[in-house]
Length: 150
Ligand SMILES: [Zn+2]
Image (tube, rainbow, N blue to C red; front, side, top):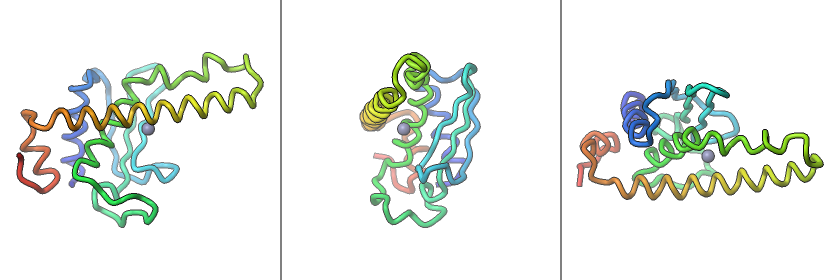
């Protein structure tokens, strides 16, 4: 997949998820922490930097610890990162409890909350991508994966 095709996929799902008013910068660069992608929203305005690993687009060798690719992997990752933006306010649980709990309790709470958020977002990403298979942009999305539209 090219960077331009990735950008099209981001714009398609940006609209679908009601994030049309956001200013997004899409980059193909290795994200921090060995992730496939990261979304870094600004704190209070609707702006974010989305960073996608070159290996995700087939532009670098896939890390050994990452599972083999599935057909809609890039699209699921795109939707996953955009859902982080849509749910940005839930990501701020730490602001609610900051300074009110013992730091060990706070750390356990935040780790649990973060894990639950990641699992929820991943389930939603898969469901959204797989329930929208014959979109008006099916041709564009299919060609981005190098296969014929169904
Ligand atoms: Zn995530």
